[in-house]
Amino acid sequence: MGDIVREMKLPFYWKEPLFRACGGTKGGSISIFSLGSTWKKICSCRFDPESQLMALLTNNKRNYITHADLAPLVMDVVETHPGLEFLRSAPEFHTR
Image (cartoon, rainbow, N blue to C red; front, side, top):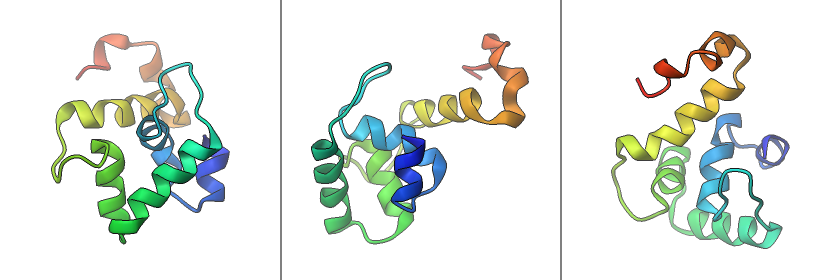
């Protein structure tokens, strides 16, 4: 997903919210058709990056976010950011 969001000119850490918004689950995959239709649906009514991210995080269902909406995004950053490698080995801090 990292290469895909780069090609779409989206922020790198939108990869997990975009994947989930397309119906993807951990360890699973999504189709290019699901990606295209999801992104087209979001862009048809959300024109700025902030509202597009809100739609990705909430599956385009709410105009506010919850802790549960942010958890996958934060965990993706913890698991993939090179500067946070020390946190990967300390799962007791993941929920905090």
